[in-house]
Image 1 (cartoon, rainbow, N blue to C red):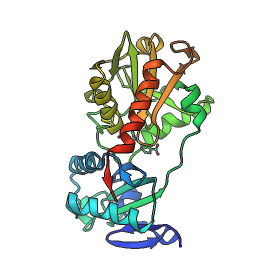
Image 2 (image 1 turned 135 degrees about the vertical axis):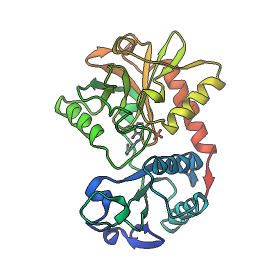
Image 3 (image 1 turned 45 degrees about the vertical axis):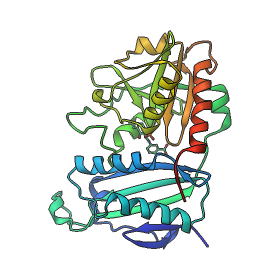
Length: 290
Ligand code: PXG
């Protein structure tokens, strides 16, 4: 039996899980999403992800036809049905079917999709040796136009940045704000460590307020570190003691090079390694059981 996908209260086989070509999620990227993980049958930070999904949808005036409790039940039921122990969970809510115009009033029923799949882990080498990334010309969306705090189905801004990195032979891109401050990577937040301070850009600059980001800041604070949300420049990155990325899929990935400049001593930093260890402990014990 193959994986089943939840669409509007029904389950479909993976190859039968389809939406209409008139869905505004497809026609206009009019919708929102979340990426969540489960570890040994514990859904990590489920409440935080659900809250962010509802905030994203509120940001685009899209009413989700389920309560938060019902959404949590749908996630848990889909995971149980698919008997997944370690899963990647993708929630998608689209404006639904409409006509070919933009008018969202034509879309009478939002579509709610819950995909649960086996998690594809990043290569172990990346965590052991660290990642080299490149800064790219495409700036992050300006928050006044489309706030990056809305996790919308419009990811072209990040995809363009990703293409620029790939074209240069790198797997990940570091994006700046339109004013030239460090923003985030295409699917991950960025942190630096300087003189024992943990520093990450503030959300108001125009980045996604990552749930892994919040968790890492929390772990660092509890361990007695000074944690700052501060504007970071290119220079701050180049001269950082340590650097790492955070995201649901990536967890914590050490960054050892940016634009062919070596960060720290070119190996994953000590503090980064200890945060990685603590983070993995939290993922093993925290979460919603299913
Ligand atoms: N910034 C952006 C732009 C993101 O899309 C993060 C930061 C990290 O946030 P969390 O809450 O996950 O710590 C994201 C999340 C993937 C994938 O498969 C990841 C995301 C989105 C889509 C796919 O790696 N990102």
